[in-house]
Image 1 (cartoon, rainbow, N blue to C red):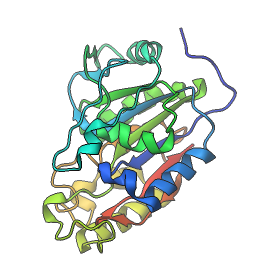
Image 2 (cartoon, rainbow, N blue to C red):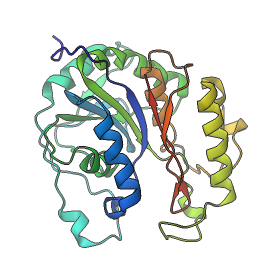
Image 3 (tube, rainbow, N blue to C red):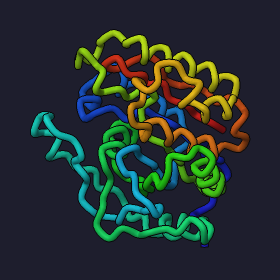
Image 4 (cartoon, rainbow, N blue to C red):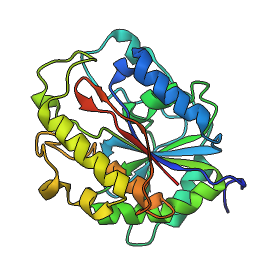
Length: 262
């Protein structure tokens, strides 16, 4: 069984999802909204967020409440909802695409976390597209690219595959929490390195970030905001073909560079 066919192959995206205040930032939210308008309309969305590290590979439950996995923000963010149509068919399709060596757990009660619902509220505010979130079961680039490769046929079925992270995420090392703060050297250096590697389609370089990237480990003291990129690259028709870097620049000094692959 497959999802409804479409003649349009959807791209795959790697996006920075921001914290809840992204919803009030007219610049970045405007960039995300414009990007979504330029895309073919998805039949469904499969999103891998930095904020769900879980093995075995796990899928959210349709209709479950949102996960408010953040603290210290205005009360209004904890009252927000994003109720999307049932994604049970997509969950079954994803589970069937994985090999026996990559078992899939269907979570009974977990909804979308802020790495999913914050950017999607901007990109698809009507909440009228089924959304399924998949966990990060590993941070190994090769294994994540293989998961993305297995998901690639979904793109021909109208499914938008998104890796949601943040190209730099050294929160402990930020000295300012202003949205327009200057980027620290470790953030700008890592961003420039990644942007150049993406422009070359150099997957091996991107995968060797621990040893090759400037700004480490400050740019990623933990790596869960970077590694969703490899699901996106794996889902590309040709991972070595340079994609489009649709958004760049910085937010609170962190890189919001985002990628679209064909």
